[in-house]
Figure: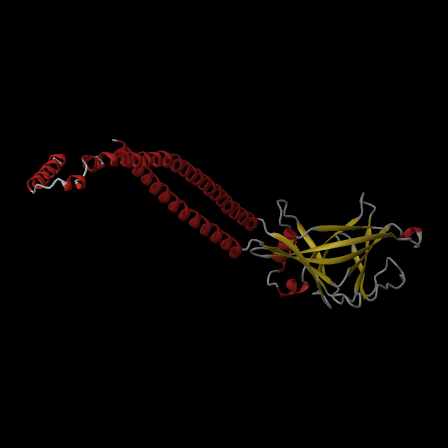
Length: 361
């Protein structure tokens, strides 16, 4: 249509020139080649559009590999981050379990703490002696680890000790009747107070010669008790028995051990004893009676206290658990954001892929 219109205008223009009768204008008339060039311009524009279309196709052809590589890299880092999150979650869970286990173990197994407390004097202990057929000859207080030489051994002498006699039935199955001489023990540990006792017993009918004794915490507990027999039964049930032999001087050095438990407090005596043979200088007729010598003294001015201490600290355990739970919360939040980002990237990848397919079709 464009060529037809233009050729008609050219013919009309040419006719008007012919009617004017001028041949001079023939040289100025436009050449048909000019119009051919004009009419061929749209055809010359086609290569340009094809070149631009091929350029776009080349750009589109080069973009998908780059976009694919970026997507793969992002997915790889996403997987790595999720793996790190799972690792941190496992470590946090193990730490929480270990913290709770350690707390329960320390709570059920308290640690023993030993404290040495220095004192000027102790409460006078009770020394319960079971002489049986033996006879108490003397009981005296001395100081500074000094015992004067014996005068007339084997004969009754001065007794300046506070002694209580208690008869009771034993706490065990046999329930035999027992007779105890309870002596008020030494208390002045600074001046090294001691008690020296002497017993005599006819050993012609015995194979072995020994006297049993027992120590308990306070002599005043016996004097203040309304039922002394029941008190001695409880002491024999809770305290240990020791012995000292005839023909020797047994020197007993006592130490007090107090154990503070979870619910109650226990008192225990520990002792160190040294034995020295008695050189009997009596006439042979008087040597049929066996002599017993016992000395009771405090070892040192230190009272040992054992306390059960629970090393489990609830506040530190709670602080550790709070830190662990905060870490888990942060990790969960991080995982949530990672999953959202992964879903978003997946949707974007699918949308770009659909767009490329639309361009191809």
